[in-house]
Length: 206
Image 1 (cartoon, rainbow, N blue to C red):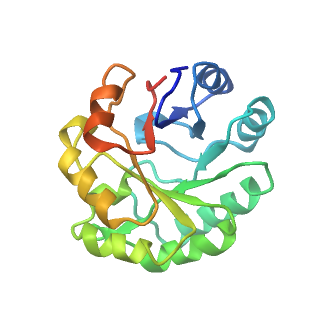
Image 2: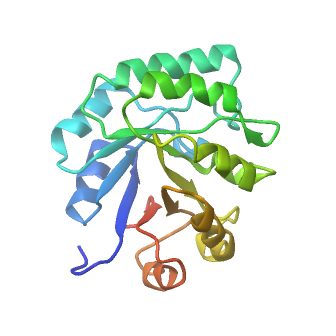
């Protein structure tokens, strides 16, 4: 762990071994999910419970049941709600989720997730980066203090290529902007010099 570090790291993990290693190497929080080849899906209850038991740092849990994209019909939405009710019984720190429709935040669907997730905080994940009117969508997210974090690469593959957009989002979002996108420990110092964020996220960040 870097001494005197002025920012916090969230490590994306898919197993107990990865979670334990992330904590040992200085992660401040983990995002737990499964199937990263799909950009992450809801982890199982047994895995989530095991990670919560073994870690001292906070655990945020992905809630996503679609393999492709971020849209949710009524059936998918109900699966997400059911997952929230089950996972909420565990000592997790919060949820990671995001639903879009026609390349905008699906506000009606998100409202249906806020209620069962309450009072736990929510990270709106990189689904945000597909928004065709991100300024307006951020204004809407600002109405809900429960959404305390947004995860973004600035709509770029690498966070280092989305610096201008990430800084813009930082200027308009009331909560924490957490940068993601191929971030490794090697690029972090330079990235932080350009962004000055409190949080950075990645699967190889520690």
